[in-house]
Length: 547
Ligand code: G3I
Ligand code: 9MR
Ligand code: ZN
Image (cartoon, rainbow, N blue to C red):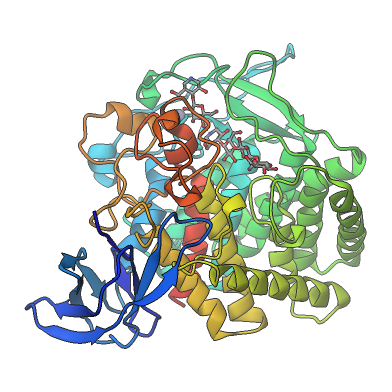
């Protein structure tokens, strides 16, 4: 069967526009909604590559700038309809933000705002402190992490960070409205995005012990079966404090203190106090306290090889907030320490420069985002800037190696590959917007969004409800059991993963190319789960794209 792969949502009028064909066509035509041809051209042969498994032909129709709904036709094949408009991503933006509301835990949801996706109060019992004989603790609130019902401190901090850095870099994100309950601030209602993020911040602060250390996670001992959240009634456990969680909470609360200052000064002070307590704990505990699951427990581990990147993020975030020199000194010495660690690391969970890593494990890049917000020119700012430029150039070079102009390599197709992509798009966005604007960066971002929304050899949009062939079967417990035909819109799939790390994934044909190691099946947690920190980088990237 022949395919015309393209972004199934559509394009901004001034962006590059292309479709990728897996067949040769003498010409292609763009038809408007009346069926009239408004543009034609020839699809150029690109050839094969290492990731897509296709011999590709590229139809460039960047000249199409007029608002409207169109299709592309070539060689007797017709694409899905797509739009060209300044508002083309408005629905997507609302959807990807509203997802966090649908993932709310406890009793923070109401029928008016949740509609058919409402769930009853869940996980309201106090949590047992694992391995200790202390009183159970109230840690109600926050967002469910993903397809499972765990709540994990580092994952939560990173998701919040993507969004709040989005707010810091791109103010218009504060204008996005997505129909959630209003929350009062100092001068009227908080912007929706800050009201939603506050839900997770409130929870993250509850995860802090009196001595400043932060519990790594709160989950049942093992993953719940496929049930609604209110029916998951097993005992909740708070698993041990880690320096990873403590540093991430120090960093994100300092970041948030700066953001909420202008909207709710008392809340900002509370955040700052939590951040300072966490930082003090880090100083008192200079040795890494990493994390391993308790014997027999199978909920998310979120293990990391080092805590230096987390401490670097905390120091950088504090320096950006306070301007106090001791934090800059800390950031500089942690940077040297991380460079040393990185040099000797055997298995690296990332490609490229560690100071551009924006994931749940390596978070030094989040520290870099704080450094790049500084209004001063110092050696650290210069060094981080040049690392971002080098990484952005590496990504542009990657994009020239395949017909999809995708900035990924074969080794990026791991569990959560769509996040690998989105982290790259964040780097390109920051480099393009605040360091060294370049058309190539912008075009590579566009190609990445195109890939996510359907211009890929799976011919699928990886965002639910967005695109005619959007994936429909996320590994997401409520979706599995709620008897509603479609999942809620705006969920980002983990995406192709050559590791095929679950039973159902073994049904993917052997030796499939990286881009095709995917299956839209509810069982496929290693290919098709959703998480808060796969949605959050898309919020950042879209905010940049629309600014
Ligand atoms: O670091 C190695 C790298 O060196 C190697 O080249 C590559 C090849 O497979 O693998 C890399 O490690 C992968 C790691 O993610 C990188 O981030 C592992 O194989 C892979 O198993 C691991 O997957 C993580 C998964 O949990 C299993 O631990 C995902 O990143 C992470 O997003 C996911 O998180 C889960 C939570 O545990 C529970 N909640 C849902 C959530 C999403 O699935
Ligand atoms: O549903 C779980 C998913 O959220 C996790 O990412 C994944 C890896 O930790 O585990 C899933 O739960 C599976 C469990 O680990 C093993 N039995 C099957 C569960 C999914 O049906
Ligand atoms: Zn819950």
